[in-house]
Image (cartoon, rainbow, N blue to C red; front, side, top):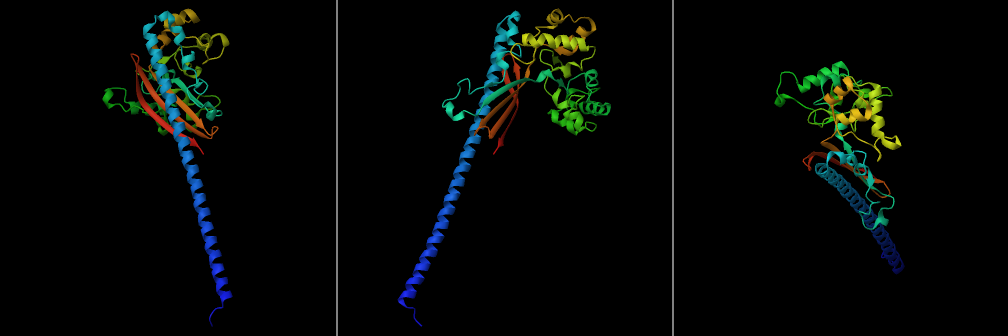
Length: 317
């Protein structure tokens, strides 16, 4: 039976409504997809921007190291006090606050900072003397034996040694527990007192923390207190802008009164300058929800920097 005109009109109307609904759903879907793509693109742009700023912060730290090395070469030793690791050139600083970026209103709740860390303030696992390794409370005798076997120090040439390329490799040495690595209330963690960067295994007495100084043979607790007290400067706090440093071991003896076996131990195991530094750059976007971290290990030779290691990662959502 043929459809009446009313039925035909109704069928057409329903079809049009269905087509309209489908087109609306498609438009909404495309719109939502476009919005998600736009958000993803903005997020990716912020990530890229944060990483570029973190890299720039590391570059700024390298420039500071080069300037420091140049001035040290030019100025006589009596003026080196202003080049200490606690001075303003090595302090963590927010580059936004220093006016390095235009349109600062876009970054009101963000930061771009760099930190310079002296790697030779720690004990170099690859070159430290056995007597210092044996004084580390978190290293068991069995772990020390395996470290010695890996480094093959006795009766082997340097070409036959297998040095640690990263301090994290110690976690895979049998005899090193999680408590040894992270530390406990009574013993410092290995990750906080060891490094793989130095040429001679000697420790920078101007920057070494208490836990590292405690591993130096023949150094008493009174000697350590005298060293730290002088280094802390007028505010009594370490690693601040008032920190003081020792020009050499004779200067250390004059400033602290340390003599005898303690001074000889410091002369044997320590030094007052460093060549290896870790520079960490951190930048944030979106009020800190996106964070980029860039790290470089740099060696300084005759005022020239050489990048030995470079790592970077982005965090946040």
